[in-house]
Every structure is written in C-alpha cells, then in structure tokens.
Image 1 (cartoon, rainbow, N blue to C red):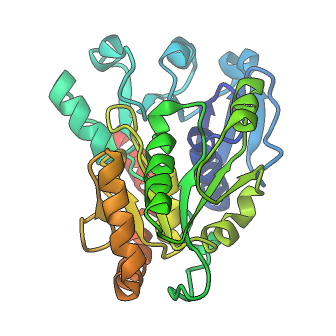
Image 2: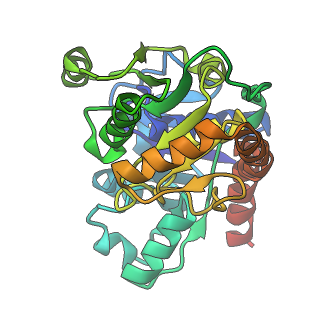
Length: 328
C-alpha cells in the first residue's frame, strides 16, 4: 500500500511523532509511507524511514490512503487521488461537524476518549486507531527505592500550553515542599517557538527544580528513569491520547493522571492512580507514592505490562486490517 499523512511541520510534537512512528512500521512491513508538509522537510530529532513530500505534490501522488489530524487540511485530502480519505481525530475542541456528516470522509479515533466523544456529540461510530508507544524503546525502571535523596516528581513542562496542566503539578509540589516533604520537581520540554522558549526562561518555582530542555527524544527513557513518579494534569476536555503517560508507563514509572487521553490506558489503583484535576488531589496522591515503595513498584510493574497492548506495531496492524476490509 501507499499511505500518506498531511502535517503542518515535523517539529517535536506528540501529534507529529505519532505518524513518524507509524510510518516507520508501515515501511518495515513493506509499504510506502509519505509525510506531506508545506516545505517537505523531514524531522531532525527522529530517525524517520519513510518519504517526505510537499503539499504541492499531493494531487500528483497515487495513494491508497491519506489522512490528517487538522480539519483545515481536509480539503487537500478530499481533493487527492487517495482511495481512503481519512480524518484522524485527536483533539476534542475542533469544529468538525461538517466532517462528521460527510460520508466520503472516513474517521479514525486516536483513543476511546475521542471515540466516545464522537459517538455522543455527532452520533458517529469511528474506527479506533488507538495508541500508542514503541515499548521496546523504553527501558523499564529497575529500582523503586528512595533513600538519602529527594523524591523526584516528573511532569511535562510545556508551560506555554495551560491545557497541559503543568501549573497544577508545580503548585502541588511547592505545597508539599513547604510542608517538609523532601521533594524535587523534574520538568522537560523542547520549545518549538520563541514564545514557548521565553515562557521557560521566565518560569519560577518555589521547590527544588530541574528543568531539562531539548533532551534527545531517543533517550527519553533515561530521563523518565530518573523520576520516582510521573504526574499528568492535562485538561480532559482537550486531550485525545496522552503520549507522556504512555511513555511513563512504558518505563514502568508509577503514574498519577487526570482522565485526559487515558481511558484506554489507566485502570485506577491497578496500573496507575486517577486523580481529579486539583492541586490538593495531586498533592494527596504524590504523598501516597512518596510513603509507599511497594505501591510504587506494583503500579509501575503493572503499567509496563498493560501498555504493551498499545504498542505502535499493534496500531499499525489494526489500521492495515481496517483498510484491507474496506476494500473487500
């Protein structure tokens, strides 16, 4: 098959990484995969094995399937020669009523969060292309002991996007530190604009902090394994699939998370802790993990095992099976 995706760029975003990961698997399975962007430039941060092209070449390219996550780019998808014209739905707060009513457009949901939203709001059953993470790329945590050092709480540091909820985690850690808990906060981000970079330069925190900027993507497990727990406070009204939680779980790291993008991933109290999106709730759950090494080990081990179901290889195979069935 010849498969393609329209992306606005190939910078380090979870929504971009999703298709680079899938593309490599499609290529390994003997298919062609083409990423179309305005300038046709490939990523510098990821070893992408597929092809790059520009928007101007879409009309000249024969494709079995073409998709995008951006509603504004769907006219290009619909005007293409692709046999399957697909809207891959990854964000809730978008104006897509016209797409959901268009029978010529096939719709993929990146998670059960999105699937249930589409069914409730638009009455449309979409295809669950749920996932994922390449589990083999993440080394599992070996020790859950915290002795003679601070308890390290890790969170995604994309401060420029308040929907990520980083401020809730920061506030919870500051509160615990004031109460005498030996806490250290570990944040990470790769800013992709000057606005984001300035936000990081201006950031202040009232507890011990390490902010890792521009960490190599292919060494993410090294970063995650420096933490004792991972906290995600993302807004559930926006998120479809939670990449950072999936990565943390692949590293066997105990996770505290909101509902955002985690309906598929999290069974509360079994492989992670589900939290209400309030500072005091995150602080309460951090204290629980702080005090209980066995709880950290149990949740982390279960997280690693359960996330294997959402390996990108499984997602790619599900998509290929879907396309083959549609063509029968």
